[in-house]
Length: 391
Image 1 (tube, rainbow, N blue to C red):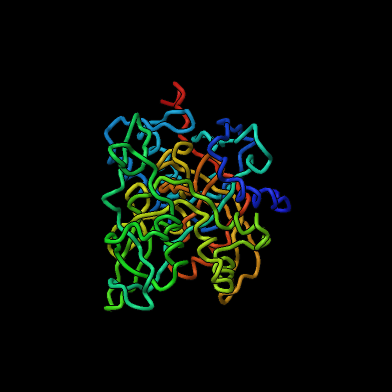
Image 2: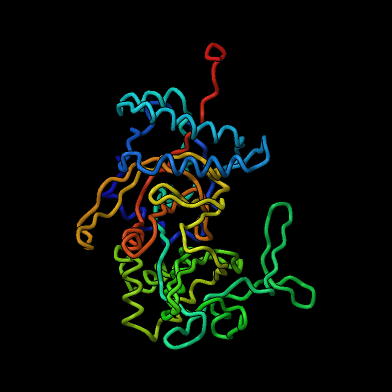
């Protein structure tokens, strides 16, 4: 079992995210005795759906495509096979013992283990995200004074050998794009506004979550979704609140940050501007959240990770813990163990030691997602190569 009493290690990782991209890691093929017990706290609800969405994405790639992750290579066919094997196993409704035996026979179980740095970075930090709902206006009318921006014409993205450089052209030279502070203080993106919200922290939340459903003043609903970013480094404002002794580490949640800003409005811009990263959006249907694979996300099953380390569309098993609520009030924690699929990414997810679990849409899911900053383990499942006598 994961060491929940050693919870401080997972919390420390929140502060250490900025150096995660420099972590070295080993890809470990686990022996049967080192593998977890594969259980599913959702009783497999939503698993067929999430696997089908990953398969649809993988089938849309050129036939024979290979995906690189953690210095390894895997074909789209192998990832599709992994999803289909698990679906066939589940349709047979095996006992937990039989399911675990079949997984050990038919899958390689892999864990990516960060190494060579602090103990906190050798643990995986499990967080949550969701699709928020906010009121908004298509015109700047009080109280709707805080804009969400479309991708501006001044943003330039160059791709050199698979590495993207983001900036703006100044006298023909590509310079870094403006920071959050520069954009907001200088009103540098006037004319690129899509919609206005009533609270600047709501805008910030959408930047972090990557999508939202907006309830507009004309009675309509519209969706917005991530389009691009300014290329600047993401910094957790929760980490800043801890570093500056504004808030104890264990109390940092989305709700507690919102409450602090409401009580200290004079500090709001200082705190929000600690995060140089800035997100731009485009309009979508007011439907399910869509991940980086271009497929709808499945609540409780879709995960966002650094896809340099985990293959998009890959089948995985997540072991962590989750908050428990009764009548809207958190009452405790319980074990979280379930099969998930890699379907999203994010600018804060750098390195192998981060996973963000999609909780769904609406305020109730936001409360749970905002509480998640837990220790955890993530296991990648790939089909075993068949032996000659099995063919």
